[in-house]
Image 1 (cartoon, rainbow, N blue to C red):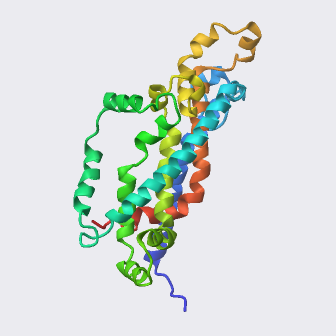
Image 2 (tube, rainbow, N blue to C red; image 1 turned 180 degrees about the vertical axis):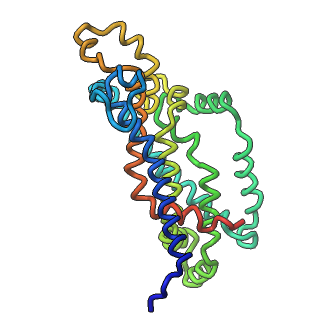
Length: 296
């Protein structure tokens, strides 16, 4: 039997739909604006004439980036970093959160370990000690310098810990009675029911690794090993020096290229992969953020 909705309920649904539609449009407009500027001519972009549609359509900014071998090399480095970093982070978060989600009677030293990890959320060693640690461990100028220093994100671990604590304890007890050990319980019971939390943490990790650029400048000595964001940031800084050494033919081909169009092109291209990935994880995202969020 379908219950007839009241007028107030219909108004509430309409209001929410309109509000969410407005918020969605406001979130999309900046990306459309960036894309329009990157596809516009130099004069239109510098004059501020571009709104939501390209003015004096030009591919020069993307051609300039796309013709660079360094661009595709740095893109591949970023892909490797995201894949390796996400796998390592999720694995460490998973195996760390599992024992810490147990009660004190199940894991005797749980509280000291929780405080040990919690302190790192409020106090850090600082930039110089971190650099010295990375250097002394031989990670300088390698991919691992971008991955291992932040391999275990404590905030993500806390999210996973709270999610685990929302799983009924009876599942553990039933599996233990059937002869399952801790590892089997972790991979056979906890992992299948943790997809929302894993998707949420995975999205956080992917975005963090993809957008990171400063650690590449700090730990990598070879520009050939730069990830995409580091390469793009250095590209802007070195653009003026490059302009002074290019030929007349190259200068003519780049007459519609400016620092503004190139910046907007790199911002859009840097955000595009995340915008492509997000819709596939969105259905898990809200649930992963709320399930177990009130647990202590």
